[in-house]
Length: 583
Image 1 (tube, rainbow, N blue to C red):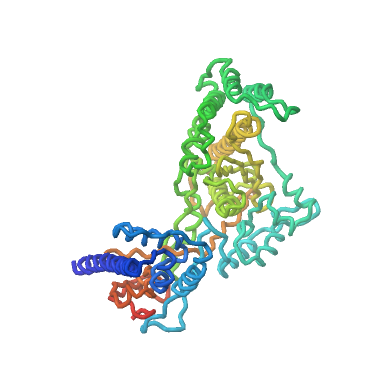
Image 2 (cartoon, rainbow, N blue to C red):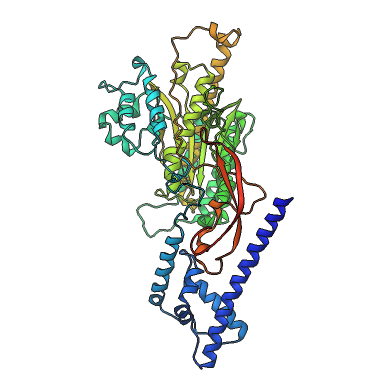
């Protein structure tokens, strides 16, 4: 109860203090306006700012639009006092004050002096973001784990290219020289990755791309006939030789509608894929008919998922496969917590939080594919780069690893199964397929990227290829699921239970290297209930403001145990904001 009272008083005190600060600002503005009326001069916003520079600097953020913020504040007071205010000013007049605010902001963002009970020499390591949003600096432990996995490999089972080059050896040699995390640290390579050109020759890259099963499955004849029919209909309305000819978009919609429905509707029990394809095309034609896609640039990521990408999820319904959006990946959860055990040397580590992909293809406890979505289709956007070049390969690796461990690391099965990932950013989509063509390395092959155009005349190079991609991805997942279920059903070890120690090692086994778990990630903030502030949450910019000096706040500091860095208790107390320091 005492803590609750302190919390309530602290919050009320903070709110009242902010109100006092705003009241003081309004009083200064009123004083300025009154003096202008008394001196028969026209008040201006820039004149007020120049005469009250310290006030403006101490109550502004570096990211603020000073002209807008302070113009609004002064205008509101002038309107209330019915005083004419001149708001016109040049941008150059604001440069000096803006520079001062940014300089003040850079000083206020510095780490505050340590408290007396802490050693002045102790420094906190800067926190990096998780691999969901960035490529992390590699820790010494991560490099050691990367090398350890390499040393566990059997040289006879490594992937050898046609010229005798051992892929695993090359990846390890270059991987230990990198300072930041890359997919090769999990022994995954994207055959289209530009960085491979620095470590492999053209002939070697050709081998990396063409070894094993490197083709998409073909589509059924009926599906191809439906898509080709739509393609031929659209061509009739597009004249390539006549640049001034504008296709009749409404006529294209009507013509494609007639083409896709000319054979009637399909039986979902007997012809599920044809039924899904027909319904999806009709739905997209409805979007074109009512110009829904012309405002797609204003859509949020959720809008894109609900209105567009969820149409593709329905293609997997007849596989009795769950398409789960925004769920934790079981494979990643297991991969990131493999070291949790009773070792006798240290306490059980805290369970690490797993990635939450935007989509998971899940069936019978295994995950066969994933997807990542984004609002922007900008190829240079950081979110897209990180998620497609690092996040997606790691998720696919974890899924592949869990499948193969479920099948007792069977090497023959490892060469057959494939995991799929969809990259859906903006209205564009491409497909990634991961397999194990040889050795211990997992390879990622990627398709071309296609975009859902805003006009029906663009269906030829957008919607129709995307529908082909979705169905081909489905057939890959379907075949992988059949291969896995076939192995589990026909394996004699699954029929006759026995102790693990009595089971002989099979020569047709390969233990794939584990996924690299880089420890240099943002640590989750300690949740401190019933406390409004903690030292690391305190807004230090208030320290430089005279309105917040000598104010008292409640502070909770976590106390960590030295041997395992576990938070064991909290040090609570009140502290006062002084002249640029915490007392």
